[in-house]
Length: 346
Image (tube, rainbow, N blue to C red):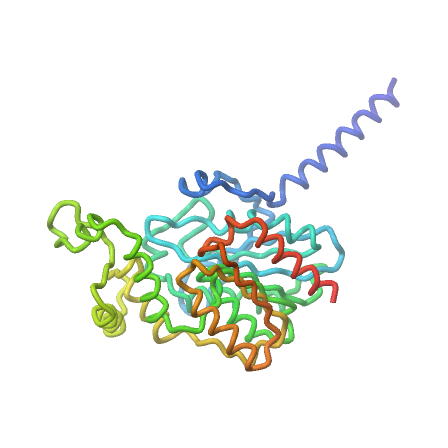
């Protein structure tokens, strides 16, 4: 009888221990559009998967990042960089982390995502976020985390990095690819590989949006701010008006003035500060995915052409029936990970 009790107790401890370990790891989840529109699914991030680092310079806030390990003894790490944010649509990177986690774990790849400044899971400091939101700041945080990994490698990491960026994350993974040519294994760029300047890319986006916006919404956007129904929307009447608006952001890079949903500081950084693609420094396999229905398509075509001219190993998935949102195209996602699997096998 005592032996039976001991056996039951042992089995209970083993089962409880297994449950505790599983609960301490980030779980995969593909959020729905409804969940995303409400700020993403509610999720308590395991403390064992959350890490912090001091930011470079005098900024007192920490960098927050999440790390998921695969079951293999030796593995590369994928750095996932999400898209842009609007002031009224700021969410944690954990939802992006979880959305593609299973695909990477199935390939034996670890995953790291980095919160934008002002975001810590459920907690969002909108003021801090908007004051620091630029591409260059996001790039700096990713560089800091990568340098920390190189100086303090996680157990099992083989020293190799995979980069995946979507939309605004595209330029960031391009820069990281050229920053770490000896560490990079492969890069996937979804709807974010572009050669055009931010001035030209935003104009193409605005032209596309204006053509598909009802006339009454455009009219409301033209009303003075003191009139009712005025909207915080940007509808330039011509390319000249657009260029003048861009020039104003360069003259006054304020975090308290906005244009097209972004701060003047953000535009100034994208126009003047953020580095252009250095095609000759792309030394590892690079997958570009772009939709023909996306306003970025001409810019992506130019990116691929210039990268190949510079000798880069670029694969181009130019998808005829896709717009900007790769997440809605399961076949494109599957093809992207099939491409990545080949790079891992090689």
